[in-house]
Image: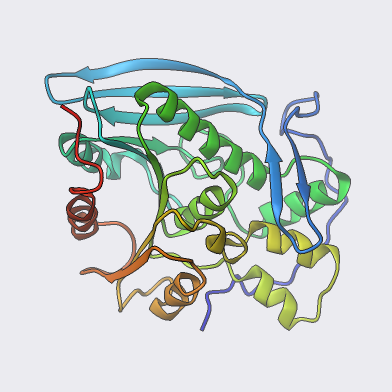
Length: 300
């Protein structure tokens, strides 16, 4: 059974629309969506401000503010001096930096730059609305009005994070996401060919598109739903690699739902079960670091 939001799709156009909450100027970033629901983005470049928090012989940890047209997006970076590859990490719903600081150091010590992106509306330092009925209604209204949905802006944020790491280190950049974050990450990897690969952990489709199809919707609601679903993009990641991890007893996103999304990916791809229940954990960390040891050997 595919994971589903299981909510009625409300077409609400009575909200006060603007490109960004609290911003009277329309956004400069633009998008188009094809008839079959494939998103194309033109993301306006922002500026970056960095504050070093810790620096030692092994790694440097810093806070990064991405100044965008629709407010600041916060990221936290841990990296050795010469990483072999870099990770844009997309957290799941409600995941905070505090739960990932040891992980960031673990990856940095293994030779990888690890950038935790505090997503819009995830309850951290970055403002926004969390993914759910309210965001879907607001974003669909913006989509109908030709405004920039927050969901699309979040994908622009991940692309901006990739560009920052790639320009800084000149290494492959992989996008990695856990749970809801894996869904955003799959869309970003499918849209941005400069991502070197995709890692999805305890993730699947949102289920919105299947829910609408089951309710008999057609037209614009279906086109919008397709534009935000991982299934629309995961097949476009190939020939870049797809790695997916799922616990068989996951109580949040069923194992079968993760397998369904994985089966739509092209080669090369790998699906692994891990010890635990839901979300990234030390077992997943160890498996990723081991798998990448021969692919992205740290530079001397």
